[in-house]
Length: 475
Image (cartoon, rainbow, N blue to C red; front, top):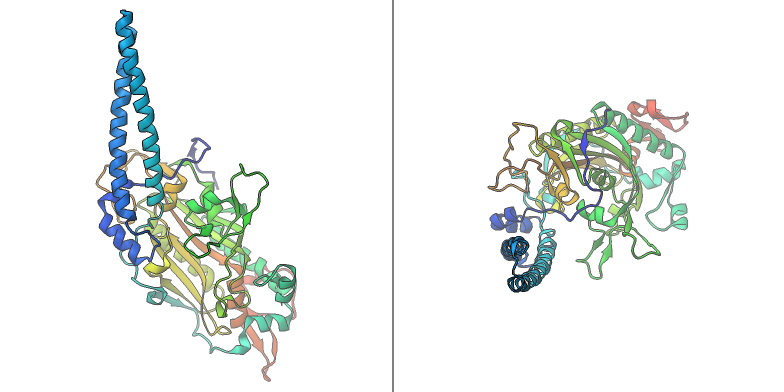
């Protein structure tokens, strides 16, 4: 695939550029939206944004006037011949310089406060998103055969141990709880799943990328991920932080998803509109420090600290993101339909959107050993939330008009910029451990006496399988 045309800009990542005007013009909506999403927004934060934005405009206007007056004085001094008059003007210039310096300091302080407040405001929400907690999710579609009955005999941990393909005890000895070894057929299954999902992504025009698993904490934050949960008491680390002997070095973390380095790959760039959409599929290791609540959701492979993940990522124009969201959903559906287990697509409610998502679809597979549906994938339209923080923009084609839509969190009455911020989307192509759970629990094969003898795996994976196995049946 041809590399996208890109207009080069500075390599230093500037501060996020948020739309304070849009926030100020829609404070009632922003307040209701934050409440509906259960966003941890401090009381009075939105009103403070409005106040500080007004103060920023006042200081900017006054600073501009003072700078203009200072410039005029400089020009005047060059024309004055009388030394006494020149001394008077020079004294006036020194006073103006001090006033300009003071105003600059005030403006920087106000802008820092304003940015800190505005960064806590979540993205806008699609009008069709259900209101409420996880239980309010709407099932958009169901796929595959009817779910088989829940059964403890299909628990993936017991099956994996019996077949000798999962080792949690060695993982606990070497690293700790929620770490694991995939052995033999389970390890081969990871490779087959990765290459199978990758083949479908490539077919749909995604460009393959292998990503760094170590990222700057700042990049993670700009993508909408909190390296540390400051609202917890005491604060909880959600990512693994890499210690550095040099305090001047930027803070580094292990990436929680390839979405972060993929988003960072496009940071501080301006693309031509003709180059969009940019579609990449990234393979990386994902690291999650939080253990979560104990119980079924942390049992076995379902919630672990490290796993392989294939991630879809898209950069597109602001009027194309809703269409791209449906394309992501279609690609994901194709991947999972080929795996022959029951799954469903959910439109996730407001309290499940996090900070960055304008809309989010989850896909859940039936896991009979767990006795419940379990999330295997998600797709999110982040509109310009990440792009404003990462400075991902594009230059409009001549004659292109902005398509006004509530999907843009920068929407306001101001004229459309010639170089707007792009929209970004992400979706899971394959989160390996969850898929392994679904395949093992749905595919466990028992003989007539009920004795476990192996696994039934979908034939779609066979072209990506290495070697032979006495415990695998292709169906």
